[in-house]
Each structure stands twice: as C-alpha cells, then as structure tokens.
Amino acid sequence: MAALNAGWPMQIIRMQIFRRLLVIFISMIAASESPANDPGTLEESVCGSVREPFAFWLWSRAAGKPNPEITSSASNAVPTEYRTRDGRLLKGYKLASTAAGGTVVGAVLVAQGNAMLADQLIPDLTPFAQIGIEVYIFDYRGYGNSEGKPRLKAIVSDYRELFDHVGAITQGRRFLYGISFGGIVLLNVIGSGIEFDRAVIDSTPGHVSDLGCPQRYDPAANFPRDASGLLVVAGGQDTVVPLKVSRALIELAKARGGRAEVRAEYAHPFMDADIRVHRNRLELIRSFLAG
Image (cartoon, rainbow, N blue to C red; front, side, top):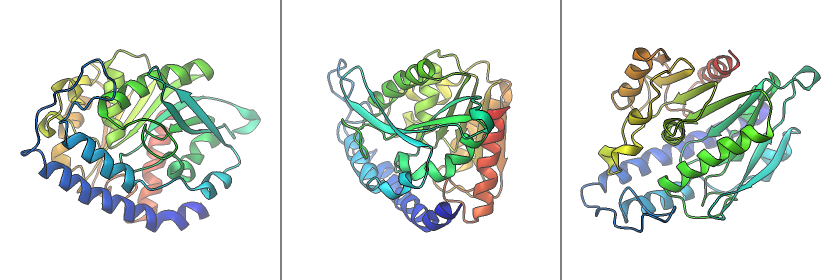
C-alpha cells in the first residue's frame, strides 16, 4: 500500500483538474455544432465535431504521461497490447493472479475514468489479483502509450473487441469494472449483447444525450434487462457525477434485479478524501466480483 499512499495526493490533483475540464466541456454544449462526419469511420465525432475532439484533447492531457516506476514496482504487472480492427495499437497491462497456487477465478476488463491512464490504477487493482481475479487495463486510444484519436464511438468499439480478446485468452469468469466515463463505455458494450458474469459501474451518468451525444450511447438505454450480475455504485459526496445524474442507473439496478450501493461518504472514484473510504470502496467492488 506504500505506492498507493505515495501517489494519493497526485490522484486527487488529477481528478480535480478533470472536474474543471468537465465543467468546460458542459459549458460548450450550447455553442457546439451538430456532428457531420462519415459514419463509416470509427474515429468520427458523434458528440459534436468541435466539442468532442476538444474534450478528449483536454482529458487525455490531464491524464498525464505513463510512469514506468509504477509498473516496475508491481512484479505481476505484465505489459500487454491489442491491435484493433482499424489498426490502432492499444497498450496496457495484465495483472496476473497472485492467489495461492496460481488460482484464477476469472478476468476483469477495467475501463478507467477519462482523465486517467492504465498504470495509475495498478497499485489499487493489485488486491484483485491476490484473490485470483486477473486484471486487464489499457490506455484508451490516443492516451498514454495507445495509438489513435480518442472518440466515444471508437472507444466503445475498442472495448467490445477487448472483451472478446480477454475472454479468448483467459480462463474462468468474465468481469467488467467501469469507472465514471468507463461505465459509459462498458454499459454500451453490455448493451451490444455480450455475455458476462458480473460487472461494476461506479459513478456513471445515466445519460450522455443531454451532452449532445446520440441517445443510443446513453448508459440507461444500454442497461441490461436482467441486471442480476450488475452492481451500481454512487456517492453522496460526488460533485463530478452527482447522485441526480446517476439516479437513472441506480433505479434501473433496483428495478431489474441488480444491486445498488449508494454510500453517503463516497466521493467520485479516486477522489475520496479519506484513504480508508477509498479502500472500503475497492473492497466492496472486489468482493462483489468475486461473488
């Protein structure tokens, strides 16, 4: 946990920057133009031809640059990569199981927040590997070590491919963990009809159509009718995605057999002021996935 404690102030700073950028993004909605791009291109902008590229430009820079020291401190972190159908090379890491006897319960594909890089989560996700859940986490296209232009349509496509890829190279159950923007991505993947065992969606808005994106990308529109394997997490202290914004997903989880955990002490993921609250949150997620 020493690495986590050392990097904690920087995580808070990054997420505070993200919060300011999100405000800028939302303030641009009224003035943005409608999307008018070639629908056959994965990297087209579907949320505004000016607004979306500018937002991802800000977010990808707020995420910073990869830090080799983080990965070198985790002996079970193995670099991995995947080439998408449009030829973009996505780079990330696998956290191999460190459970007794090398037991593998399953694999979790993680989609992080939109101002984060894969390596920044390695210290926090290491406990998952300790109970036999192998972790796969990639930099979004256009972020960190990954190629391409970051766009919502393309990132959703990437994670649909990554889900199949991880399932083909691992054993055991199939898990998903979406953090904030990552929850938008993974609910779109779930909505495409994949078969998964359990998924956690943490602090994700119910709609993105009110930000100028097509309604088909709304997380609520992609919420599974059978949500028995899904956990929605939200926090009363979250000022980035307040409860009123995530309420639709909370209610859908309750109505469709899923689980909703709304904790008054939770802020936005990785912005919890108390490290004990942060660890409690990760333990909740880890325990749910492990079943």
